[in-house]
Image 1: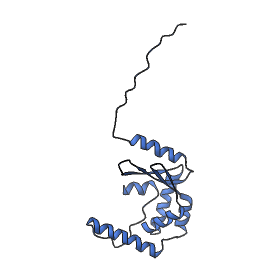
Image 2: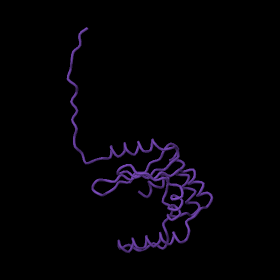
Image 3: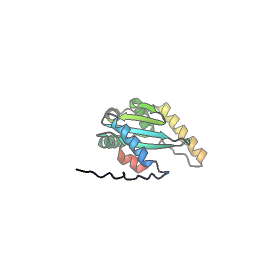
Amino acid sequence: MTGTLTAPERITLTPSDDNTPVARAIVESIANAHEPEHYLWIVLHRPDGGANLWHAWTDGGRPLGDEVDRAALAAGMDAADWLHIGDLNVTRSTRGRITVEAYPLRPVLADVESGIRCDQERRAGVQRVLDCAAEQTGHTPRPTVPRWLGMGPALIARRS
């Protein structure tokens, strides 16, 4: 039997400013490296000093994150509670220009359901930061801290 040699197909690479496919692959790789039922807050720091925020969920994380949000909103929790409960449960890591905050959603849900709330001193500090930001940007200060920010895709998609 005789074979015929053919030249391999030529691949042409085109420069692009769109790094979304690469970022998506990075985020997927990070999510695959984490345990199930986690919400991931991933920041890709760019060389120009900017950053891109990505939200990701590991297996089982999407429905559980939405359950956390429903419970938190039903309990009247706000952004200060979101910060406090998040800080109690987060694991932070950095790889090069990538920062990952991983929130295990079962313990977060347990904290929400048990009624853990932000203390008044920190809540007042959050309000001061919001008031200062409003003043510096010419907006009217909010009278209260905004509602729970979200750990599930449904609520996060609504605020994006």
